[in-house]
Length: 395
Ligand SMILES: NC(=O)c1ccc[n+]([C@@H]2O[C@H](COP(=O)([O-])OP(=O)(O)OC[C@H]3O[C@@H](n4cnc5c(N)ncnc54)[C@H](O)[C@@H]3O)[C@@H](O)[C@H]2O)c1
Image 1 (cartoon, rainbow, N blue to C red):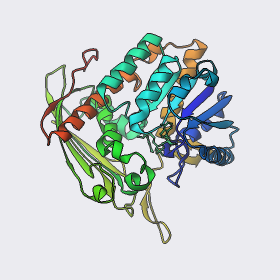
Image 2 (image 1 turned 45 degrees about the vertical axis):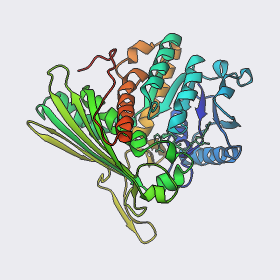
Image 3 (image 1 turned 180 degrees about the vertical axis):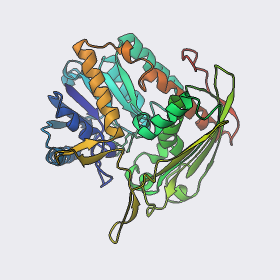
Image 4 (image 1 turned 90 degrees about the horizontal axis):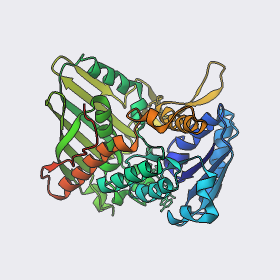
């Protein structure tokens, strides 16, 4: 398999000591058991060439893989369509990991070229863009998905099972608290944090998750934000975003209320990069999931107190003592790569995965909510209807 990666940032390489990075390590792990001939990373800065080489060496040494990568700098998405790059003939799969507002333009070019594509979340900030991508994908019959890795986290699979088995009774409400350290907008995403907001970039995960858990239809929302801390530091975006979002179980007509509180101004001494927890409350029971405190607390004089999540993206030993890249972040990316391999070998078709993956069709839901939330934010918290997506079959 020949893979193109767009973007050379934190999620690809783990730059700025933000951890291991997920995308390159996942591909390297996948390549230990499956054929991966070539990985080409493209982004704008020429400086990334050295970073990609260094990170590839680090990963290969860590997990004993033999991944071969190279780097090319491009100036815009138009370069991908350039015949000299030969994207269409050269790559079996692409992974897009650039800032939120650029997902659309890269995905459009790749899907038009018929390259099977995985797009990091959010699919796009607006429903119009997402629908355009869905239409291109259908016309060109190209497999595509969004990297909503929370769908692979076992704690969420328990929630889904309990809801489906009726253990919670009729779901009444869903409450989410999700925040990140202020270093994320100030340092890590300094170049683009004012072009997104904390709900669009992060809160979207828990919108997709609730849709995945229930299949319910988002109906209307109201959103309020607070600001000041980031603005004072020259970044014009909300410090926190608070969303009241109503869903409908279209089978029974029952309404469900969700309440999502997000911020990205947590102190840098917070015990984890992401503080995240949610509750699902039903007529017969409740589930409370702490996705920050997974029971692993590390306390040291140099690193302070840290609550660690060993289940997302980690190098952990297998039974033979060899480090392997593991976690639900890895499984989400490996699933896409194995889907591509299945389709290419003729063992599966794109239709086999329909409704079973965070594909473009299913990711229209979270993007429709992001758009409605952004409208409500700019209308001082007015109620905004979530655009109806007629083609989706709701539960
Ligand atoms: N960091 C995470 O844990 C995480 C997890 C899941 C998804 N994401 C998503 O991944 C995307 C990227 O996140 P990141 O953490 O890698 O960000 P980042 O800021 O670290 O990296 C962004 C990369 O995009 C490149 N880039 C910027 N503009 C470009 C352009 N016009 N053309 C080509 N390349 C361009 C930059 O050079 C950089 O390599 C975002 O949409 C984010 O929401 C991040």
